[in-house]
Amino acid sequence: MLSFEELGLGEKSLSAIKRMGFEVPTPVQEQSIPLVLEGRDILAAAQTGTGKTAAFTLPSMDRLGHAKGGQGPLMLVITPTRELAQQIGEVAREVAVSTHHRIATVVGGLSYKPQISRLKQGCDVLIATPGRLIDLMEQKAVRLDDVQVLVLDEADRMLDMGFLPAVKRIVNATPKARQTLLFSATIDKSIMKVAGSFMNDPATVEIARRGDVASTVEHYVIRVPQSVKPDLLKAVLEEKGFYRVIVFARTRSRADSSCRRLRRAGYKVEAIHSDRSQSQRKRALDRFAEGEVNILTATDVLARGIDVDQVDYVINYDVPDQPEDYVHRIGRTGRAGSKGLAITFVTPENEGELRAIEKLIKAQIPEMKLESFDMAQAAAAAAEKSMAARSGRDPEVRKAKREMADRSQQKRSRGQGGAKKGTANGAAEASKPKQRQGRGRAKAPAAAPAPQRRQGDLRPGRSHRAEVQRARSRSRSRSR
Image (cartoon, one colour):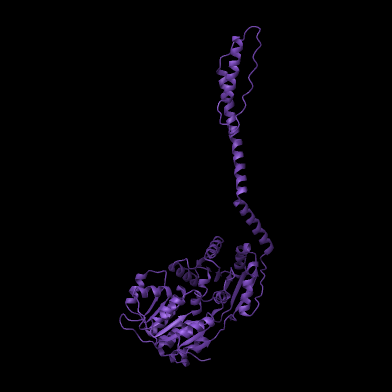
């Protein structure tokens, strides 16, 4: 293996390498750096976490000039996500401490005004996401006439995300006499097609082939019903630790719900996905990198945009839709030669996706058993909880509960109403003057107690009307 000094880099780049703590070049750096220094177009494929960013920033900036005044950029890096753009920007700024280049980063989700102001000052290296760069081009805030080096980073991901039209427009706005560096996790037919239209006789650097998984990562599956996943997630964190963990979910809502559950359980966790603002995403990544947050819940959009050293392990809460995303997810751990672990939750409905992943990586993923977790007991508890929840939402059950509550209220009302009514009737009878009985006439029988008014009977004075009727009958008898 060659050293950085033997690759042909200048003194300023070697100074940056020493300051950044690099000791020996990775395979992609060893093969790419000399070709970039020669001015060749490059089509490079390497696994995530193998030093691709340094493989193009170090040699490109080593031979890059400096723009005058408000000119530039001289080097343009296009990448699919805001997180990747920021991480590339950080590496470029480290190199620029020695090379004295001006670095600018423009991404969506942030205000246009500061970015436009920064571009007016001029820059040597511009890192951008496709959408925001197109917007700035339409506003005449940036010109690409001076670009000497064009880097397409994570090109396969940009194609997956539908950025090809935007990328074509950006490439066409740059000079044809430029150096083009295309870096991707894999090289397939779609990448070769892009390379054929954008590049001039590119040299190929292929460190990893499609479906290759880093040998430093041990990965397993746990078969589980969908309803048991929340409990299983907590059990895995308790058994395997929860210091630096990334939990990948299929959707933004599921990433958020997993985050809320873990917070309620007492974990320090942040969610990161495309619905979060740029400041929220950056803050979450910074807190995770600094250890203030132990767990990140994320979506596939960010499977390649999270670059944090020493991630203990990755949990695939959901099986990814695309088999390639599995490789990128588990590539967040086991980076830079360290050991990594990945655990994937597989439901019965996901068996097809699992077979597609195993076909891609050409290996069967072993199954893991948690000693501390009783799957059958958890499934029974989840089923009981689900049944109770469904019962609570059932219209017939809810109607029956309301009827029971109404009957109970009616009983209490009748009890209170009867007591008050009896007291009032007794007082009325006591205040009524007694009638004199005629000689030889039979004593009128005592009036029967007035029937209690039924609940819902809205006819007031029913017992009183009966009593008045009896009094009238007695009066007519005496008159006869």
